Figure 1: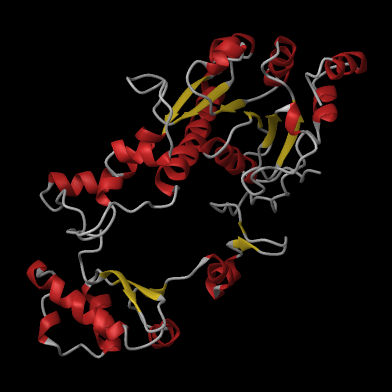
Figure 2 (figure 1 turned 90 degrees about the horizontal axis):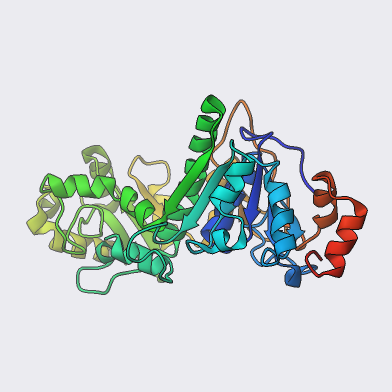
Length: 382
């Protein structure tokens, strides 16, 4: 079952060569924004629920063996009808399958060929294995995250896989599609998570260049050193997030905390006083529960909010009012973003059973019943 195409990318067709992590995230974003995304999965997985039920939503699924020559030829027939391809294999893999950029662009010159890797298509590490942790490590991001007296802290897999990977590739594909529309020529999009992590550090590198950021972890404005930009533990063990960078918000925060007249907080940017200020704030926040502090700060212009878990975030009144999370499916899932007022996205459709659309997609691509029967007998499709 698929939804009626809606969103700014309605009318575009994308073939996703099934993978894990940032590639499917890119495919999810494109599908959320209205593109028709057909995912090619392994025949061995046919009939099984999607491995990643949210990342694989909004697609149709074809179970097709890309490692067989007949499977590769069949995939090319699908790609002939596509505006874009998404693949997330190591460099050279699709070329060996006969599905590389040259193979596809020769047949479909307007095609945008999106490639998602950790290290990129070239460079000394291009052929090496790796994961999000490795990509953000060599890009400089991981070393900067964590407490001054502790080890680097993993920011889930948000910085590399998702932000520096899937989002970057989705942006690259969208940009290349605009170029293809204007020029009639497609191209390859080389999205590397190392590059995507690095570009997210643009602000920090600018502060370093100005002498306003040091390489020491936990010693800077946005890494937990500033007493007005960090989290504090409350009674009961939950936390509040304090982000009162601007002086007016800083003043309001101190007033709510009962510290407006405390001389320790007179100079907000006196870095020498930051440790003592943080210690005092920690003491004050520990005196009440997170719920009590949430009520105290409610309605104030202070930039102080509770730190919520996934379930609490979905139920928060602001997120609920905007429909930020979808909660009527039996589990919590993020809704499509960003929002387009002129071409709004349709509600996402659940991820299909693997291979559920094999026959209908291949028939629409022009494969006759006898061809499908032969491919099935050969184990090329399931």
